[in-house]
Length: 283
Image (cartoon, rainbow, N blue to C red; front, side, top):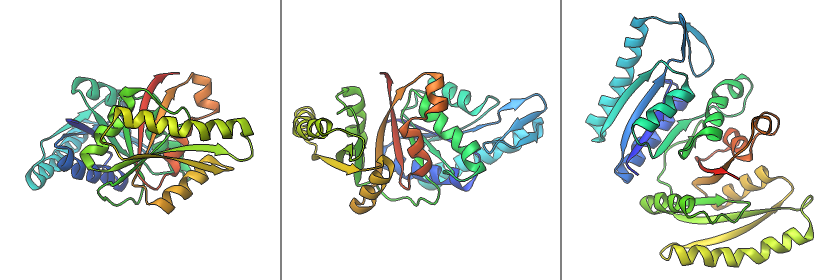
């Protein structure tokens, strides 16, 4: 965990992401790269909220100095190596380019949640990134205040055994010195009795698999029942003081993404705690 990328539009939500990244960088011994994307088209550029603004070189210089001042504060007050980049690309392309050129390990990004027009613009930027990024994305919800993570909840429908994904989860949780639990959801209305029994039987096998590969991990798997996945998960998180929710994103085709957004993207609108989305590649 060497480099953390933090896109910002200088909003309060983006500031939450910067705070989380800075506090985490102290723990993870990581470098921070700040990014502002102009999304320039002709004489206009569009900010994260989808608002077109007149573009000129003076504006670009002002934005760079504003971003650079944040970098300097981080370096001087927190002692964290930082960099500042202003890109003329769209946010999505800017993130992909900077991430590739700088070997980014983690992207930390704020979101405005799911409320009216905010969901359409800023929310789409974050959720779209979750669906396309090849790098893990940590989503910081609005109103969230930094606290050192002590509990990770990894929810999986597949009893995930991809060691590349699991390595990342246990590496970052170990750096935070946090425990990891997994959650398997069974829908009380839609799932069959066979599915419920299958989940119940697989849980001890999965715990054994994890403990065999990660001997030092303190790990248990929770079987969560309910009629709605997100609601049941939110209730569990609240009752058990979970600090970070971990989900895996699977690639899907264009029409699937348009007409049936993935559960991880839906959760990014509604979560009240940071959501770590880890890409799994194609199913």
